[in-house]
Length: 196
Image (cartoon, rainbow, N blue to C red; front, side, top):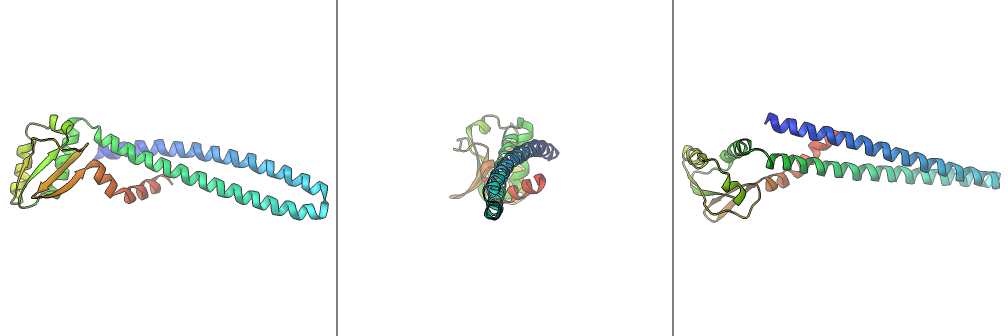
């Protein structure tokens, strides 16, 4: 898990750097817009001193409100994009681990879904082709310890990463994408807290 935390820390640092660049760019644009608004307000003031001053203040207030709104919208959009990128990078890092680390992770996930009954575990073609030789035996031992029986299906499932455990006609989707989707709100909150 330390490797995953290191990966997430690297991704978070990249995201923080990117967020700072986006914020600086947004503030530069806001400064230019503010300067333009002030020039326009000054021109109105010179044309009609009394009326223009009131109009200029109203106009400047509206422009500043718009600038503030645009800045908040830009920052929100940037945050959402960065959070999505961080989560996607975390997914890609987990999915792209070397075989030993990947199947060690699968081995840690498996006990939580084993039931005291007969079932089978299904992998996608890519994972099935690189499955460690002793994985089926370890899965069977884990199931036996819980009073069940679990075999590895020789037929590949239509999944990308992770696995599906089937007991009777009921499938438990343990693909990485399903796990990320299930925890998406929580992951977004955690990334948001870490970045901001």
